[in-house]
Image 1 (cartoon, rainbow, N blue to C red):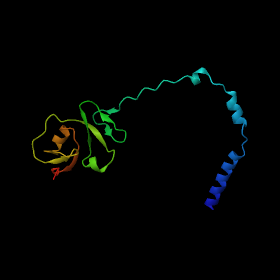
Image 2 (image 1 turned 90 degrees about the vertical axis):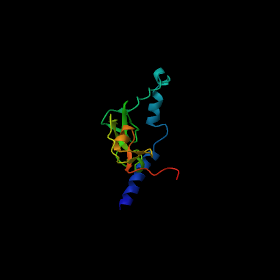
Image 3 (image 1 turned 45 degrees about the horizontal axis):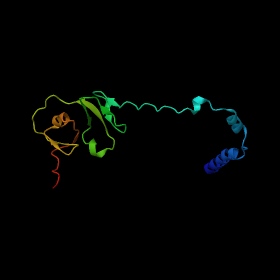
Image 4 (image 1 turned 45 degrees about the vertical axis):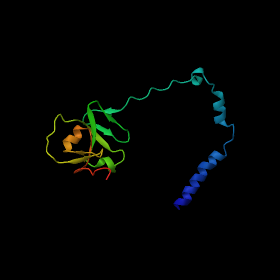
Length: 137
């Protein structure tokens, strides 16, 4: 029954357009409008939008590719760098100093860091806890 109603409604819609006469009221109305010099003059290109940047604590990355303001790094949730395409992060300021405790993490760049603070200080998100597997083996 739904299919019959769908076919009937599509037939009605297309049938109305089928029976319009060429040169009907829409063609006559279009012919009566004259082009003005403003319509035919070349338009200037719109200026390019400013690059999107975010402040500390705001969202960055994502499908829009939003960057962070100067001195900030876009840090994603742990493990998001390889599992989520176009993952979004948060703009954070690099810590001034980190402790030297050894709790290694693997960064999204494939490098091992002494701890999460050291990775964030380098502007790198953490992929997983533990050292990265050596490359080239």
